[in-house]
Amino acid sequence: MSENHEQELFQITADQVTVEVTDTSTGRVFRRTFPIDYLETSAIVRLRGEDLQGNPSEIVFYTSFGKQKLADLTGKGIDYDPCGTHTE
Image 1 (cartoon, one colour):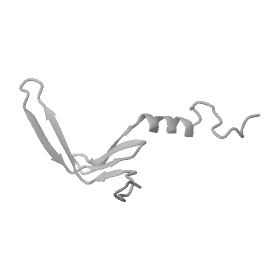
Image 2 (cartoon, rainbow, N blue to C red):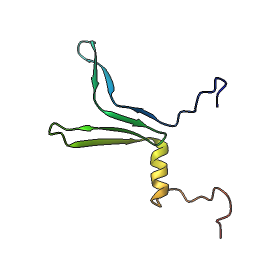
Image 3 (cartoon, helix red, strand yellow):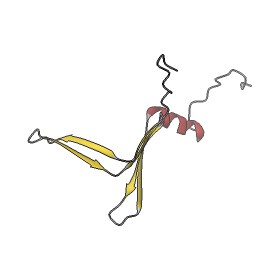
Image 4 (cartoon, rainbow, N blue to C red):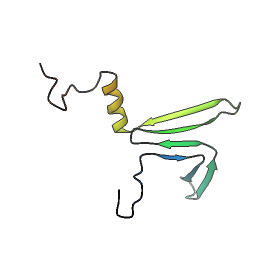
């Protein structure tokens, strides 16, 4: 815990997302808010919403940490023994 006793942040969640873009030809800045569920952890950023027909739609971006964990879980990561007790 920090000095001001705030709880550590392990994930960020929101039920809407605001996108800000700068038009390349005019330099004008545009902001739009969308009803998209947002989840961010140390491993992923996930955006979840609906398509034009109302069907669920989701996209997940993996962080470098998340990609390494996924590789480790599927047996494609680097072979290492973090505690030194699994060597032959």
